[in-house]
Length: 280
Image (tube, rainbow, N blue to C red; front, top):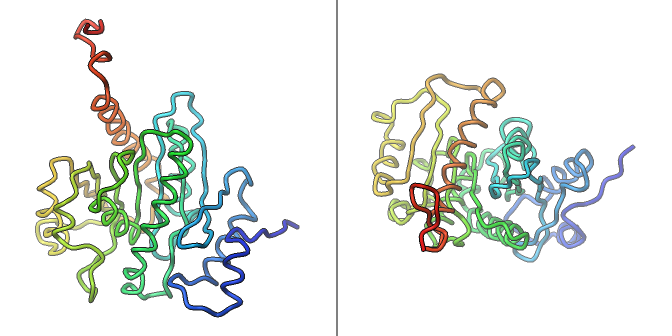
């Protein structure tokens, strides 16, 4: 029988025993991470720190010799860092295309508490920063973010607040709605401040022109010429039937992002003429 190692570490166990208040639902997070630790290759499990406590990350190296960069995955509600629906296929599939992946455990609120999840965005950002630092220590120069549902909130806030220059862009999949929240996790003004490339994918059959929230967001994001919105033609009750399409679509966009990042950072000495020769 597999033994459980408490991935969140002694620090969280001590906090749980003390009964002190912390934002995330610590008991649920501990149960999830222990379950994942028991069924995941030890070489993929990493311990990261944020707000003085350890949390779990799952790191998978690119299989291809041509490593393009790394993708940080941020899950949403009713999901986790190795969820069989969406997250696991992407964190395992992108390495086949040359992308290292780091899937992070996001702080979780009590079930059905959307405002509570919004209140955890600052903690999510701290965890994201910890993950980016981990990747930079591996000398990975091109980093992209991939967020689902409420994970998109922290990603957008991070992109609006002067992100690390290693972060080149983000993919958002079905961002959670904010219209019914008392305190939205990100304002329209913050959205306008984002200049990095963003690909937003909506999996449900909706009309962006008549959906109030999506329409407002699209209008705001028009200020960013690198923002793209992809609305799938058919509704999906999950991603089991469209994993290959999603993986290939995201890989294609990330590859273009990586090529653009390399082009922007190229020095004059590296610039080539149309014939392929270096300019002197």
